[in-house]
Amino acid sequence: EVQLLESGGGLVQPGGSLRVSCAASGFTFKTFAMSWVRQVPGKGLEWVSTISSSGDSTFYADAVKGRFTISRDNSKNTLFLQMDSLRGEDTAVYYCAKRPPVGNFYFDYWGQGTLVTVSS
Amino acid sequence: QSALTQPASVSGSPGQSITISCTGTNNDVGGFNCVSWYQQHPGKAPKLMIFDVSDRPSGVSDRFSGSKSGNTASLTISGLQAEDEADYYCSSCTSSSSPYVFGIGTKVTVL
Image (spheres, each protein chain N blue to C red):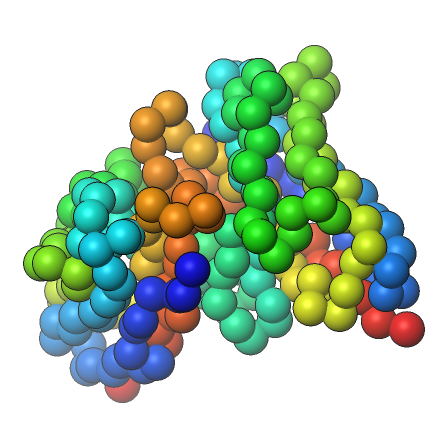
């Protein structure tokens, strides 16, 4: 059974940093691209970032480019999102999501999410 | 990249069929066959219901079906059940700087 478990969310001040993690199990983590998608409470979904299976390629939404860094540790089946220079508009639930094999543009499994609140 | 347009809410009685629309542009919905649909119950993670416009993942009820015409994709729920009450989001790949765009979401209410 595929499981994705996010952690690391919390309250951070504007301008601060936070790293969230996603522990994966139930599939061969190193063979799939992974993504982060966020959701402002009560609002819609927004794609944030994607990393290739090897970690060699990364992609970011314009809203977070230059501030967020996606990475992965395939030896530990873990995905990360380092968030720097945080702003109030970054407040959201952050979901990690698994991509199916290369060439497919959807997310077949999602974690339960971790809430990041940016406030003074 | 603007969000895809969905109706804010759709409702129906048990047993009825409802359809949720998802309108984009030639740069996303109309230009590619990569529309997907997600169901989200309150406080829960999104769940994939339809991918590649009309394919269903294993385990998803065949009461859910997808289609596309031009720049508008649709999700139809047949034989509406109480458990179908949730928010539904469409998504598409795009030719813009962001590879994915989501719809604004539709709240489905079972009367």
